[in-house]
Amino acid sequence: MTIRIVGRYLYRNQEALLLALTLFLFTSKSLYNVPFAFMALLGLYRLIRAHGSLPAHAESRFYCLLFFSLWIPMVIAFMDPVNLERTARTVWPYLRFLLAGIYVLYGMRERNPRRFIENAFFIIITVWSLDAVLQFITGWDVFGYPYVNGVHITGMFYPDLTIGHALAGLSALYFDSLRQRSRGRPWIWLLLIPLVMVVFLCGRRSIWFMFAVNAFGYLAYRFYLTQFRKQFVIHALLISVVAAAILAALYLTQEPIQKRVAKTMGLFSTNIEEIDRATSSRVDIWRTSWRMFQDNWINGVGPRGFRYVYRDYADPDFKFYETSVTHPHMVILEIAAESGVIGLAGYLLFLYFLASMARRYLHNETCFACFIGIFAATVPINTHVAFYGSYWSSILWWMIIYLAIHMHDREEKG
Image (cartoon, rainbow, N blue to C red; front, top):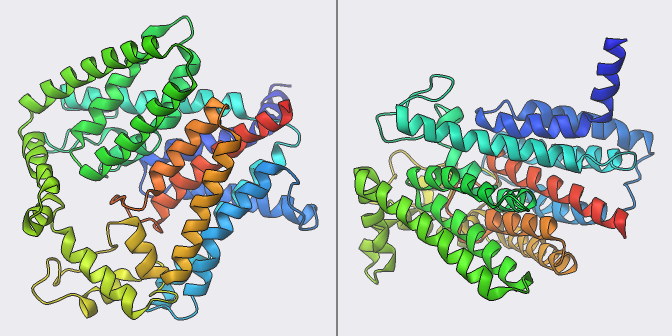
């Protein structure tokens, strides 16, 4: 009887459990691929059983439009890549995101995992943030992972330095999660403090930028919606003062942060050398990316092919000439160099579909928070991890699936 009850529970909540497991496994280097692959296999099975017909819901069409906007240019770029094997290992496994989405979208015909996955999301992000703060304060997290050299905060993501990317990228969704829990419990917003601390302590400009896009985007959206704007401004200022005080304290006590902030100020200079120092010598990488695009402007060098021809387009005195780099460190240049104008056209379509659907869901607070998060993750001038890379692609499509779940809930309510 107990086995039957457990089995029934797992079956009823299979989509939500797999999505929650995928989210948690973003703490690892690659284990998140296992539940994603499992969802893709189940999605393929459901697609075959349905004789190849996709679910006829608005969110299903939207999901497919977003996917094919990015994937079709990748396939076209696969026709003549600089490294066939590496591009193949990027282009064809990318299909798992479509199939995983189909798996969840079909599952929503019978059940909606919205509440379950939202609760799991809130718990996981909160635990990540608190654990990383514990690591900062004591030198060790709950698993015994160290605060590396007293400089690099990792939390449960040890030894990788990706906790900031994950928290910043998912922050708009977390803001909305706190909003849902704040009715009658305004103190719940204090949970923002650990998240902001971790993002700041990561000391990476790309993470700060992505978090800022999420935070300002969400604040602007809430200001637009509220009928009590004066009260909202007062509350926002109070939160800003508290956040500023905490960040100032961290800045004054953390020498690595002071150096990083001082270096970042060079971004506001008109001197190209200052800008280059402020961006960790990325100007040379951007120049190389532009040359690569000019020489392969139709369909690029192939997704993830940048590293293999960097030295062919970089000057010998360019930074990283001897060691090369894995990607251009700017979304729009990565797409241009690796999939050409076809990739750029698909990317613009992706943003267009995103913006068009966002207008339709303007008054659905959770959906719009997801739109903000997805936009922040795909901003053209983002300089974070590789756009076509497995890790960031997985986080991006996890967010899009999360959005689809809430879009379905809205459609069901009419």
